[in-house]
Image (tube, rainbow, N blue to C red; front, top):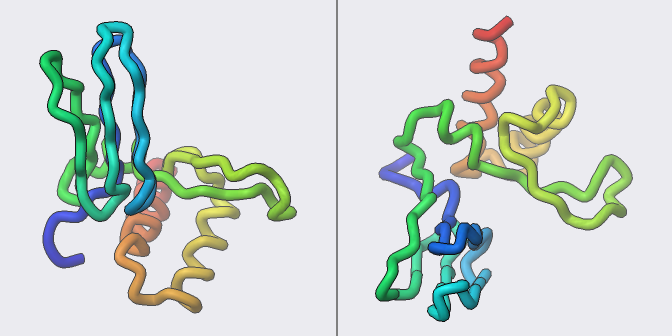
Length: 131
């Protein structure tokens, strides 16, 4: 992977609300208990957030962060084994071994240039090191 890549784009507002932007035009907003509106946009392409009197806390995670942190926040969406369930996101650490292997096989075949493939490989090696 070239350069630093955003892997998780999130902020926490003063009232504890977590906003996550998952894709480029995933604009999310929240009217905080303090009366200010907080926004986040950009997914994994860029971070665009509001400027507030009381600032939000950034929960952004980047490719050069410690892998144990990356695996807790880098996520993949899925619709269940039958593909018919509502979309739900899972942290890399919570993806089961079978799904992880299927992701790797799919990405190697269909998108071998996927910049996130290396994190699936790292997760597989990380789990081996725990065994």
